[in-house]
Image (cartoon, rainbow, N blue to C red):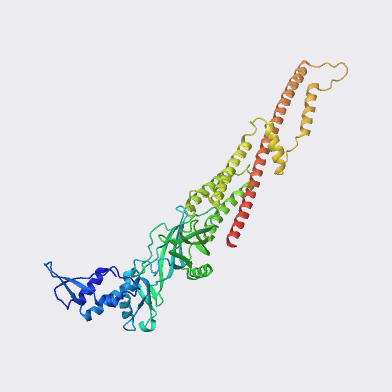
Length: 521
């Protein structure tokens, strides 16, 4: 207790000796605690108080009366013994008001750590339960949880007899006692949970503090396997000011108990579910700070994303897959595929809010959607190419040699569309007709008198036959070139159809494996 407070108490008791005088209480600095010589009784009995009359410089010395002297003796003895031993609270009555009155003088010690010897370490036990997972902000890398924090430690200044005081526990305002400066290092925002003004203190000096906390903490989120991702976040508890020699953190309960209790008291059934809580204790390399670190494993509930994102996307890509069965010669497949692309684009715009956004990672689901859109666009371009080949391939030049080798031979073999053999019978018949036209009809033996008109007709027939052979040869060459280009279009169409089937199969298998691994943990 401060000297001014002792002076106030002394003046109140000594007021009846000399009313209206001013008193100054002075203590001899040579007094040492627990020192038998000189004895405190002899010292107090010979101690004088200095009295100064108001508005004068005259000093009077006098001996304090015996009744008032006993009060001063108790004050000096309490002051001498307080730093070296625990305070035993004596209650005048076995009820809480008497206990509170007996504890009131000890509230002035709330500014110091509650140990008699400064070399003694204060052990603080920690326990918490997760009452709710409020959300995860992937863009800001934040985890929002609602915790119930529990701390307990021993206050060596306070003990009392529960029988004498009528209670083994009392609730006191937290600002009347010393509180440990324990913080969560990952805290990124103000704690907006309701304030709890009281703590429990027991007769043996045990202090129990329980308070809620809305924790907005930083967390390194990995959303690559979204929506089947599992996040591991960390809560690091340590003293902000005290080192490990002054304050030591220990677990009040096992992490298995904390996990089971958190699952039992969980009040939110939102997007995330708690898997487990693990913890470890370590000191830094200089062993200055005592740290308790807890790892919180969370799993995202993926059913909503499967129903709203994956299944509609798979339906649209499957419809585009079966559009390859439409004959390109008689049906305008390009209009159908363009309608699918527009519908898929609108679907992605509507569902964009469900997709997470972050700066350092791209979810695998976003890659899947991009590949689906790319395949749809490639399918539309391939349909345009085939339509062009079917409608205007007769005017095209012959197929280049490298396309014949790459597409007609290699890719055609891979997609089971080998190159068709040329029509050798037609070529042979054309050659025979050409030979007959050149050689002309066999002439009859013997002298034959032919009319001049007949000779002219024969000459004209020969010219028409030669012209017909030239047209037939051009038609044959153009038909072969057209068939080659059409064959190229069919091979590309079959190849893209196979890529579609392969992509959908791999996507299904990958999604099932990732989903199964997520729920097997």
